[in-house]
Each structure stands twice: as C-alpha cells, then as structure tokens.
Length: 300
Image (spheres, helix red, strand yellow):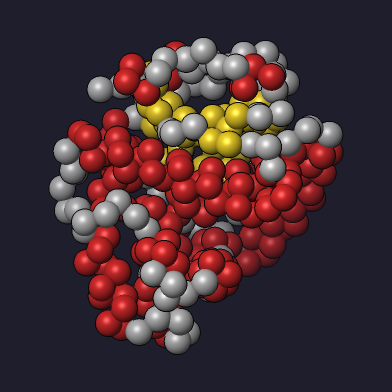
C-alpha cells in the first residue's frame, strides 16, 4: 500500500477530484476474489455460489468461509489476495491514461514520492523495531489495509502512517465511534477503526452484500467482526511471537471516550474512493489497563 495519490494532491500535481476519479477506475480493475479463485482453480463455480449464499446468512468474508470449510488453505487465500492486489492497475498508469498527468510528470512525481517515502518508512521502521510489540503493530497495519479492501471491495492506500509518542487525538468526524479491540499481555496494544455511522453502514452493507443498510444490531456486529478478523489474522501471522497475548471481544465506544493513556500511538489514514478511514494502534502499559466502558456501555 502507498500514499502516492495523497502525495500528488498535496504537491498540486492533480486535484482531489482527479484523484477520486482515478481511484474509482482503479477499483473497477480489481477482480473479485471468488472469480479469481475459480480462474486459478482454487475453487469451483459451485463452491463460490455456496459461499456467496452463506455470506447472506453470516457476516463473514468469502475467503474466510472457504478456509473454514477446508476448501482452500490459509496460505492459498493469502496467495490469492496477493495475486488480486498485484493485478490491480497502477494509479500512475491510470492518471496518464486519463490525461491528468503526462508520462514525464508522472515519472518525476513517482521518483520524488519514492525518495521521501523511503526516508519516512526507514524512520518509522526504526521506531517500530524498538517497540516491545513492533512486529505486532506492523502486522496489524498490514491486515487493517487488507481487510478494509476485502470488506468494501474498494481500493485503499495508506495515506499516512505516523508514530506519535504523545498520542495526539486525530481530528475525526463528529459523532464517530471507535470500534476497538484490546490485546492483553506484556506490551499489549489496542487496535481501533474510527468510523462514522455512515461508514459503519457502508462497510456492513458491503460485507453482507445488502443493497440497503442492515439494521443497527447487524451493522455493529459486522464492524466488530471486521476488527476481530484484523486482530486475529495479525496474531496468527506472528505465530510464537504472539505468545502471552490474548484478545478481548471488540467493542464500540464514542470516539471521545477512547482511552489514549500515556503509551503513544500509531495513526493510520486509509484513503479510498469515498474518503478517509482513520485507524489507531494504542500501545504501552496503558493499553493493557484501559478503563473504558464495558461492551454493554458502547454506542447503541
């Protein structure tokens, strides 16, 4: 994932409208996972049909349902997801095709972005390497992007990744909620998406393949499941390194009630066709001993 599109807008190579138009075109090039699995011989058309029927009854992703039924392995699902992303058209190519950038300007902008991005990522990587759970945080960041794209069927880029030892609260949509899951143990962390009600309804509608927003309980159950998948996959990917950590059930709190503590945070901004989704990883001892509301006291 990259923030090339954001870099182009911030440096006046293109405007926001041009970026959104190009992202929509990029989204259209993303082949559905079920169709790709059939083409690759991983699943049959009948199996994909059964899985899609199951999705209407369960708030689960198609790939995870296939793994649960032992129709494909977790490794095969990861391969398919990587293949799906690799075949998505590059943003720069689309911008040139749409005549929003010339080939020369696009190449110059890409070179500038890669140089800045490399320096930034090295600095952030050094900070993460020094954290007790740096690898876990990297895994959470990785799976947050993957599952957001899988849940919505849209292409998202990591527009901002920032480590803030003072953990300033980001600006968020008024009335937004934190869908948060805590990992308890030495060097525990909390992961959260900050979502408005509109975003929650959109994500749940896409995950459940509903043409209209599902009811309130289904909306909240679905976004909890999304965060649960991110955290669960991040832990599984670490294997023995995750020993000693266990997760609590995801809960939904008003954004203003999210307990930041004093341990710092990693701020994520995922940019997609519909705007920005904010994510947070809170870390340090305070993440282990958060005193926020119980699940029953979350947003109703």
